Amino acid sequence: MENLAEQVRKALKDQGVTQIKLAELLDTTQPVVSRTLKASVLNDRSHWPAILDILGLEVFIRPKQP
Image (cartoon, rainbow, N blue to C red; front, top):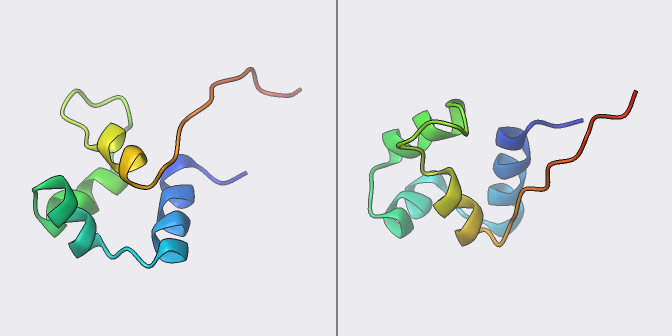
């Protein structure tokens, strides 16, 4: 199973959105986007919620299968 960052990177590629374009949409810089894609989703200063919103994605949490 892919992790969240891998899924977002795939969505960016599929939608033709570069990190630079995503940074513009988030009103930040490409290095910040790059760090965000490598960072924990639970970071208080995370751009993850906005990134998921821009890409039309949402996160579902469910128990892992044995």
